[in-house]
View 1 (spheres, rainbow, N blue to C red):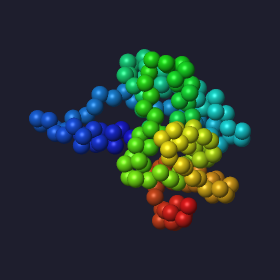
View 2 (tube, helix red, strand yellow):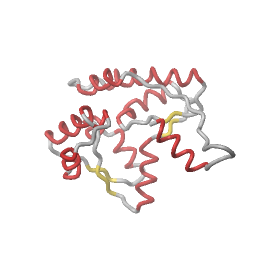
View 3 (tube, rainbow, N blue to C red):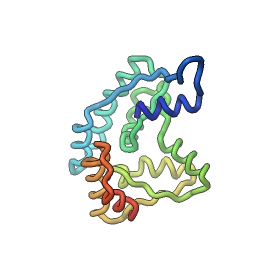
View 4 (cartoon, rainbow, N blue to C red):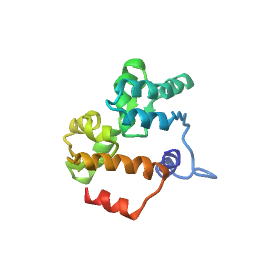
Length: 171
């Protein structure tokens, strides 16, 4: 995420005198394995996940962050707790940014592929809906599970197999 943020910032701001600029960023990362385990537990412990993610947010608040960007669809599960616990911290919601890009493309119906909680729960679909965006997800339990498995086994490790691409395109 960091590399992408710096590259986009440099494109938007442009080269200064000697080099492309980097934004002042505070980055907090939490244990993704613990996070994934909580996401795969049945039933999913959304409160525990939110608490886990808020550990990173608390570190950012202590560092003096001016606003929060959660660079993960599923991480937006924690937005209600973040807003309750840190009401002074503005949150740039991925659903709002995504909706702006969708609207700019002229679309109003989109497919959403992600972790099982992201596809099943309403936290992202509802945020998109506030902007008039209808969101579709696969209906098959088998497909939902397989998509999440590909994320954990391949995409999370920057592995992009052709057979996996074909599966996602078919969705």
